[in-house]
Image 1: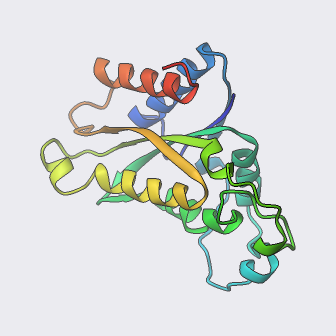
Image 2: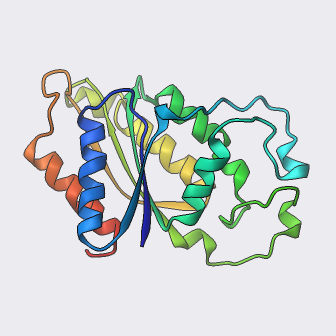
Amino acid sequence: MRIVAIDATRKAGVVSHSVDTAAIAAEACGATVERVRLYDLEVRYCTGCLLCGPTGICQIQDDLPDLVGRIDRADAVIFGTTGYFRKADDATRAVLDRLSGYFAGNGQMRLPGMSTKDIPQAGSARAVKRAVIITACAAPEPLATFFGYTTGPVRELRQALGSGGIRTIGSLSISDTWRHPEMQSWEHERAESLGRILAGKI
């Protein structure tokens, strides 16, 4: 089991610690985890040129193709991001904006220079990759849930990952980080549980 753990936060905080906790739990179950800090990469927004359609190649020269390659080689993904006003942060949204363009409709990675018609189809490809999502916001409950500060980024991530053939099987939404900047015991236990679920041990 190969897992890529993507930390899409600017600084180490409750989301980073939760992603690492899930990764450690997965490793304890025998998984191999590759850790990626999204802010160490250069990923730009889609320009809408539409050249990826006929060519299968995104024309933007940045680090996203390498990140997509890591995801393609993995069996599962841990994705952690901070929520801002019901949306994932800018770096995460830049990834989500372009992620699906690298995959055919059944979840297989697109090959450079080949259209979806040229790719050998495998119906099980979409079910292979799984993901867990971790997000956090400063707002307390019940405001965080009522206004979608935690549920919004999870929904956005789930839809974008799904379009790339990655099925979300669990999530952790942390609220009130303004008053509780450190991980609480239940958050730690939930992150560990997500790591074990992703590794197939629960």
